[in-house]
Length: 473
Ligand code: 4AD
Ligand code: MG
Image (cartoon, rainbow, N blue to C red; front, side):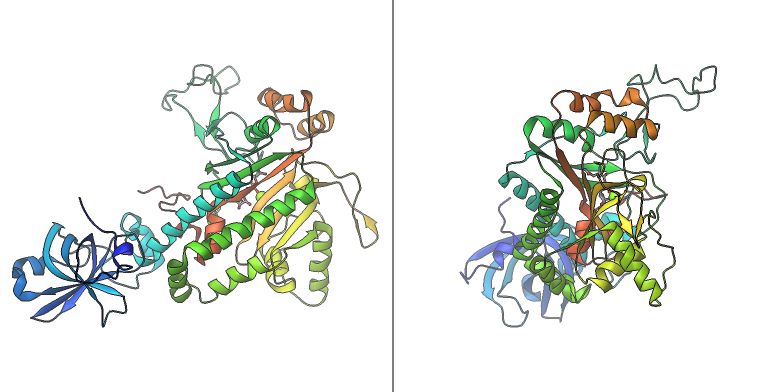
């Protein structure tokens, strides 16, 4: 089919030439003598206006052109006077591909996001979700471009796995066993030997462990794929299925890692500002008036680099000064999102990269610090070289670390945490066969999307969200 995309038609200035556009009707208004149809084809947030004189068209056809209908229109490109666009089309012929039933769920403007989620199959046709999805594509391109330009290889870690990288036990099982007739051994445990893979398997919570194998051979890799977590967190920041970007690099230390995290995020945000102008302006107007300013400010500020222990000291100071928090914050506690947001949004007013967390609240693979930290003159427990990047509005956007490369220390952790050894032998081999200092991080793609779009709920930055009790569409 020969057609011009609306994004291109709107840019053209060869007024008087013929043009064919195809798309979905956003609105139709007009009088007895003339109809104005706003058409959108997804190539841009902007609609093109079609002017259809009633005398040229069958009355029945014009009646069928309602919001949501799909059509092709050929006509003359003319300079627009009224519609706020450069060009519009004076229609000569219209072919209706599909009429739209009257119960089209996206008919009314201003529906709630909850309503949109219930109609997620059609919400993609709205301005907001069109903008979000175009930005999502652009962010994926930014990520691939960044790593490609910096000499990283795109590395495909498996989705089905037998190991729990984060050790948090939040995995979705994968099985072909007949769940109505499960064979159990003498102790009542399920026997997986006759399951598809001959062992218990799940969907991955992270591609990191395999990523480390890639990095310790190729030097620098990144993964970018779906990740699954069966955590029952019904929050605006958690999904059961989300996309994660995990670079892993040989021969880096903690400072290099933090430099990479900061440079990478800024690159992505700059990409959005450079390539998604119309969509961001729309979101800035309709969703979040501070969006563009916040994006600009992130690329122009140095992120704060903050030791966990120092973070706790600042929070305890704030509490002494009368600041109230719902959760306690003693050394050793995992920071609650209210604490993270206090540091980022109130205390520093910029993104914070927090490091040197207590060992007991982080995963087994993180490199153990040599020295014990001190708080109020007292030595605290062991810490690790983990880094979380904390962002305004979002909280944790990146989690990463330098990895423990010493075989004995890593084994010590695995034993201390009772991680089943039989699942880990291949991972440990990296520490036996030419071990090297290395590290990496995981960026939650939808958390980045929340930041870049100003959307409030993570369910609204992925086409079809998966959350507890919802797997529709
Ligand atoms: O901090 P996490 O759990 O780190 C890891 O999985 C490491 N293996 C990464 C690495 O070092 N290679 O997760 C990384 C990021 C978080 O910072 C967050 O942005 C995102 O993944 N994330 C989620 N996003 C949406 N929904 C969830 N349930 C998420 N859990 C984590
Ligand atoms: Mg984390």
